[in-house]
Structure formats: C-alpha cells, structure tokens
Length: 511
Image 1 (cartoon, rainbow, N blue to C red):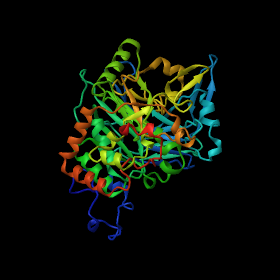
Image 2: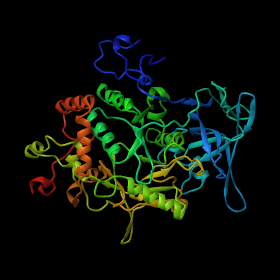
Image 3: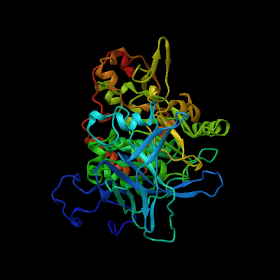
Image 4: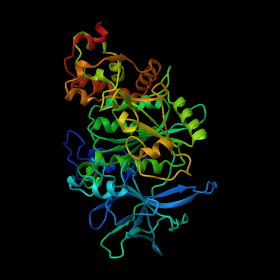
C-alpha cells in the first residue's frame, strides 16, 4: 500500500505525497517509513520501562537433530519484571516475572536471556548506569538489551495473520502487546561465497550523520568486492536526498536491507535514551533475522572498513580460519583488531590535493598507526601489552548459520563482555588474516598526540580499489550521484573529520 507501483520502498515524488511541503529543498521531513524496507514494532510496555523491537521466529536446533524448533521470541531493551538468584554452585538463575500469551495459548512460561558481562547479571542489569536516568541500556556497562523466549507457544504456519503476542505480569503492572508481523529469515543478495562456500552478511551498526553520499557508495562497493553478500543498514537519519537515492540503487540490486531506526519510528528510543543509538538491539535483531540464512555475520560501524588477507584483502581466508576454529575447537565467532587510520587528520596542501583529483576517498588515506595507542586501543600491564576484545577495539564475525548455537543478545567487541566464556568460544584473528581500518581517532586529537604518532604505509588493495571504481563508473545512477557530490563537496575528505596542520613527516606523498 505504501509503494503500490514499486517492488521496493522508494521516495515518492513530492507532488504525489501527502502532508509534505512541495517547496522543500530536502526530504528531511519525509516519513522514514517511506524510505525503508523493515518497519520495526518499537512497542513500549504500559509502564514505559521496556521497548520491544519486534517479535520473531527463531529457529533453534538444540538437540542437533536437523529438525529445528521455531521458537517465538522478542528482542527488546529495558526493565522487565525478573528475579535473579544464585544457586548452591554460585550460578545465577534468571526467572521472568511475566508470561507469554498468544491467541488461545494463555500464560505460558517466559525465559529471559540477558547480556553477559564481567560482573554478575545482577550488577549489570540492576545496578549499573543509574546516573543516566533511563530504564534502557547505557554507557557504564548497563546491559538491558535482552531476548525473551516464549518456548511453549506454538507458531501456526497455516495462519496468514497471527494474533498479538502479549507479555504480562500477574499484577498487570507490566504488560505489552505486539501485533506486528513476525520477523522471519528471508535471504536476499549476491551469491558471494569464499572457496569453502560460506556466505557473509554485514550487520552494519546504526548509521547517522552522513550527508555526503560518496562514503556510503565506496563503503558498500568495497565490502561487496571483498566478499560481503548483503548489508543490513539501520538508518537513524540518512534522509538527505542524495543518500536516499544511493540506498534506493543498492536496494534495487538486492544488496541492502534498510531498517527504519529513526527517532520518529522508535519514539525517541534510538536517539535519546539508550547506548549508541541502540546498537546492541540492532545487532541482536540482525543476528536473529539471519539465522540459518547466511553462514556468518560481520558486526562493525560505518567508519570501519574490513581488511582481509593479502594480496587482495578479501575475507574468504578469514572465514576459512573461523570454520577451522569451529571444527577443531568449537569456536562460534572470530574477533579481530581495529587499527586507526591516522592519515585522516593530515590537512593536505594544494599540491597534495591536486594529486588526489582522480582518487577515491578510500585511496586518500594510506597510512595507519604503527602501534596501537594505549589505553584507547590496547591494554598494558608493565611492559606487556595485549589487544583482545574491547582492549583492541575489536569487532567480530559470528556464526549465524549453525542454529544449534543458542540465540543471545550481541555485545560490541565480542559476543559478550564475559571474557572467561569468550576465551572458550571465540577465535582471535591475527591482523594479517583480518582487521578493521578505523577512520576515526579522536583520542589522538583530543590529547594532542597527533604529532607523536609513527605511521606505516598500508594502502587498501589496488585490485579492490579498481573494482570499486569500475562498479561506480559503470552504474549510471551511482556515477551521477558520486560525481555531483564530489563537485559540490565542501571538503574533499571524509565529512566527519576536520583535518589539521601536521609536520612534514606526515605529508608522505611529498617526501
């Protein structure tokens, strides 16, 4: 109904749109629902302390019987009625103080899966983050992103429309009703596989603030070139016309899925009252949506570019290592370091800018930190420095294809903050197999350390850059958007960085 003449969600002409100013110079006020493929439920509980992102069908083969159950579940964030106790072995037990109902299935048992941390569930769920005055996940390791599993409910595949799912406490002080369509696994995208036949989906963390379309064009083309099959984009505010046009092109190619993660859709949840635009909820949503559909999921940010093994930087070898680690050691995910691209801060002179005329944004920045900056990017104890999980600003690839692996809320730098468990279930990849290039480094800038850094020349693969350039130039819509943006851009570099004057040793092309 929203897009009666198009297979995909597209921005309608202003003359055909209701309640939109026809003289508007941009589309910032256009309802995000008209520019998205996934509209999340974002339903709040009656007490306002919990928000449900969606209700889901979660395939889970706990017995490895190859006959998985379709569990009914909810991903959400916030405070629900639950009790955490400790048994005689010191293990914490979580008991939900509410039930699940759907249709004539009434008051069935609910199971709550919380995010694990380096402290107790009790500490992370109830005690952390109190100063932020919000019931949702926050900085300071308040982990309230969770999964509710209603394992006793039966999903009737014969129904075209299912009754609402109701969560309710016995005293009715907590209740929530979700009537939206169940989120289910649907495969789209290129059939890009590594030599062992594994496919990779990219769960891109919530994206906001971009107005120059060049970066997202290069970013998507680059990751497709190194082996990503499909990208889920959680769109907070990418409503500039040129950026929307880019997303429409990639949607027509079935390379992306656009999620409405906006302020309006979430009623402020993704922009004001939770951790980093509800990053953990987006990651968990993406992991569940892609269970059994893709083999692995990559979790990273829009300012992080993945780099695989030389000579071409593709990710196939990294997936091979993850597969071997799973087979030999039972590992279900692989983490890798983040290396800062420090050359983003070098303000180029006229001669240097002239040499960049025909280069991509990704080709401008060829130098990275020679060593990680501690404590921002590593942990040092005496003379021994290590990089692992958050101590390396690591990101990770998780196995989403094997559905005997239990669903869980997803953390930033590893599957969870419980490193005792992560040592057992995650493989740490060396930099030469895979890492991300981080196009950010405010910890250097804010502490006046930019002139103290040693840099190494580490350009991205010329072969991959040629593929990116060719794909842009041979796709008329993208080429037109890219060329116009480059001509009209105030800055020739990436838009979220203001470069500064640095000593001659950082002007490498002039040395």
